[in-house]
Length: 446
Image 1 (cartoon, rainbow, N blue to C red):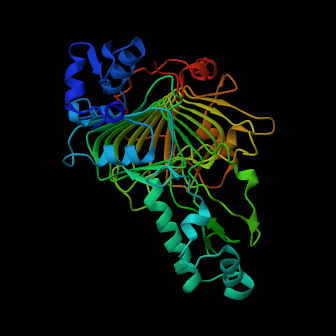
Image 2: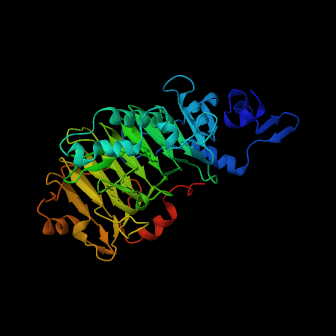
Image 3: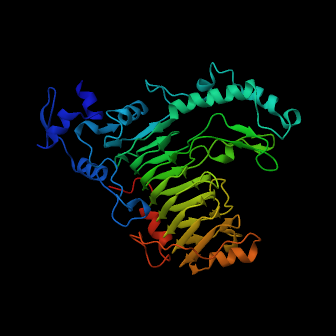
């Protein structure tokens, strides 16, 4: 393996040299290997979730790839390297993936950029033909698209998925190298039926579906539905998502065209937790400029879904922060800023459905002009929210009472469970807008 490869995929030989603090480069003699920045990055890569830090600390806790050996500690700078590192060695072997800089998921194996036209090539898909075939005036509004044009769309979408949907196995830490603007553009990390995963210090930007599907039966007017969340948990357990930034930037929804009178929506979720995922902690993340942000539970028949959200910032978010079903969800010390931003206008923050039991403690809402406390919660009439210490513009507010006074579908004002995994719970929400502006999101960890 040439020396340049060792820098990105540090095999056993190079990692063994770390114990001496020195590395030999061909023709350069002996050079110091670890700078102070390198040491900080190494500590971050080996960090584990602290005790009592939300649901992901329950039971065996969440350690990710902390136990990785030298052969499974990688630094990656391209999509191809990221995929190779995640697939290297036996399934389930502890591994650390250090992401250095920004990775573009829409690239081929040689690193060349790929666009929507590249994915459509050879599939027979053309948007103009799709629109003509499924125009409600022709196709109607009572059935989903079917036939040659829908088949071509699905084929093109599958080609894009092969590039941008990247699976993360059990016992893995994926972490951004500090000081490198680490992250993934246009990609979707999929944690499916995996256990013990850590995702930290990354910016996930513009995870975009080139081929949304038209559904004329979705709502009274139909909707365009896209695939791919920036991070998807399906049947995943013991997952810690921490200090990341999720954003649609630079492709904001305001730039999307409209077809059949509806927005041609190319973004799905930012972070979705579904299909009986369980024991998840989401902390110190920044969710910005997005519509359908976080789904907890894929349907009313989902199960498990014990999730903690603490010290996150939701800014420029339209809805689903989160939309939660079935499980036991703890929200504490989060900041929800409902001020319009980059064309995104707040609809609601938290939606309680399908019997979910949410405990909301000491969160802070900053209301935009014209918004009301009664608009912050939503539900189907079966969900419960036990609220305490929540503030709206600096004043303690009973959010459930405000909602119930203004809406026909009531939210139950209590839960049958009480959180105990509450590390870092601050007794007041007063200072959250200022403190979280400095401490949440990617690039903060050193």
